[in-house]
Image 1 (cartoon, rainbow over the protein chains, first blue to last red):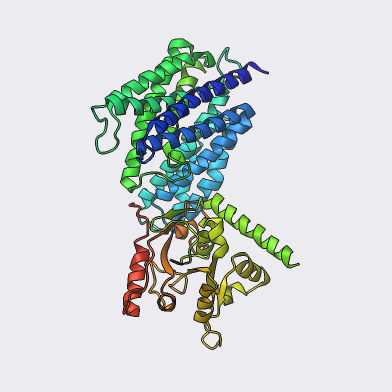
Image 2 (image 1 turned 135 degrees about the vertical axis):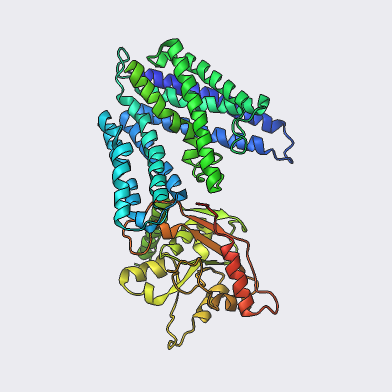
Length: 313
Length: 213
């Protein structure tokens, strides 16, 4: 067994240990409760823990399968996220072809470029080429009504759901001196610090939260965010053995990713508020859609990727 | 031979359901009723040929086995493939809309209700190609409600299909389709046909999910 496999298995067992503890806490709380009353917070917590089991299993299996597994997993996540996003955006029949191209050409090509490790192409394909050409395809159909809104919202959907998500598997192609071919582990690191930061932000926000970050948008509080980021830094430091960043570097990378992810969560909340929906879809029980579940990872991924390339690549 | 056909119909039905799920992530929103096997008439908006398969796909298996879509014979008997899919996969009640035909559509519909089947009907009569959300309803829904007043008439809104597959396009977009089931209505005592159809139409419109843009 390669050292990376051992690391992945260690991480998986660690995550399973934490999940078993979380499930146990939930079951104890439920058992102590009067069965007649129903506690929505506990129910939400339990469905969330169940979804995390699924997530850990999926990501764990994908990492063990190596590159193809990761590509398929995130390609599917991109598809689901794009589908959720474009269901809510402004569109006209004139955009039909450009939207079809977004789903069936742009998305697969981006993942081909990431798979081929053509960094020069996958970094500009959507921000430049899709940005220029899809509006042209829409314009050819000659419907000017809400044109800028239509093309801008489509581009936003592609940037969030395809470009940002694809930079998670793109971490596999980052070459770091002395790190060997263990860059798969960067994915595990990013997902874990951001998701645990979110979880602890939620927990501390409920406990000690006072000052709302963005009232009218989200119940997030500065106290919760600070504690969440601090927790992410500690978890990052504890996970530094799977990264090339060193102790301080890992803590910093974790803190930055977690903070950017939380702000990204606010952006997604603003979009949902604007469209008058609570969740992006109902694909994941207790969590809403893929965008709801992954919003913080989606926003953190490009920053994490760029910092890794810039400082360690 | 007939076993083989039944088996083929099951396979085709499952494939249609899986295809609908994979492409449009179609899901049911049970707003006004529970997904329990109970005799109902689901009346839905009609913008595309995919409406009926979508509703059919989101029903749980036990309900799917007892539901019969009411559909036009001229469409489903056009060729051999359709004649297999319509009557055998979806178990359609085929009605002939031509006025000169002897067997009246309503007799077949009432007969299907008396057998205990639930029905899927499109009370607008035709596909809605206009910008209005609904066309005026035909009298059929009212006649069913009067003839069999105990049956629940469930307003069923199929959302987003016009964007998934607008008329004249070839490639379907994989957007999320939602089927919303509202609270059942019944024909009230002494209610006139027009009043009831207006109420039914409003009840159906009320199920439309609101997305601001």
